[in-house]
Image (tube, rainbow, N blue to C red; front, top):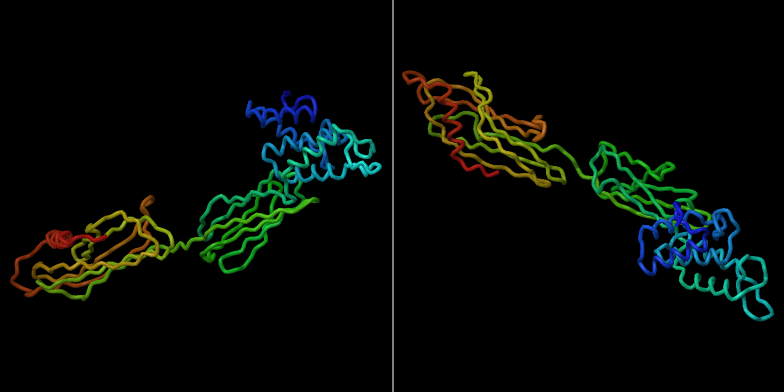
Amino acid sequence: ESADGNWSNTFETALATIIFQETGYNETLLNHSTGWLRANQNEDGGWGSAKGETSTTSSTALALVALNQTGETGLKIARGAAWLVAAQNEDEDGGGRGWSNLPGIPCSNPGQTAQAVWALSVANYTLEIELNLTLDKETYYPGETVKINVSSPDADEIATLNGTVTDAEGNFTNLSFDSNFTANYELTADAAPGTYTVNVVARSLNGTGTATANFDVLRLFPPTVSVATDKTEYRPGETMNTTICLANPSNTSQPVVFRWWLSIPKFDYYSLGVATSPLSLPTEYDECFSFPVTVGDWGGAGFGAFWCVGLFDPETDAIICYDTSGWNYTPAQEKGREAVTPAEIADALVKRVEEVEFPI
């Protein structure tokens, strides 16, 4: 075998390919020889001793058998078979129609006729162009780019390649393919969620081919968190019911870090941590949780406070969203009470929250 995958000429290369295919002798040599045969088909659909040489019955028939045995079913087989059919001689004195090695020579012989019949009897082909349509992903979000690629064993036969994308609402957009059969589809920031369909059509002088692929566009809305108390003013001994709600309106789960902290501006306390928890909010999640806390005897001085909750990006720690809920502590008796330090108040609040089982 020569470096480019042939044995002297098409006939011998095809014969070697058939032998390797039948015996499973050497897959590397088989791939080389098959590639050479595919690359050396003439424009008229037949094969000569090499590309550009006059197509002959023997070379075309053996090339067809060799490629067919390696699984080739595309236009190369169809065009080669069409060449053989066209090369068949006219009826000769009622003796049937045979083949000679060169078309147009009305002198059929058993050798070329047997080769042509063999090739046509085993040729498995379709006039459709074989297309492989692939996307770089299966799911996308609004604002992303869908990268579309088309490949084909009949690529050198394709004259035109067109395509469309139909969105989830039935609107379609025409695709523009480059010379490498690739195209991009830009999803807008407000692209409708759902299933999108890509359709492509390839045409050549001898046939057409189609391919279809689907991809999904997911809703990507930021998760939300909220906090609220059942009242705005509390006295010692009362129960403060704090409700925290978490929601993920997207149709894909979203990882976040949940944080809950306390702020008492009067005492210059602004970020006393209550709870921190990494979460993976499920698809279309929407739940609320209640935290009952008994208000303690926190001294004779009233103060205002805020519960603060937020969701943060687990990778960058950037805040995604947050909410606050203000409330006031009113002592049972303003004067004559032992003073309670801000740290003690904050510590008591945090401990009371920690006593409640965190359900998230």
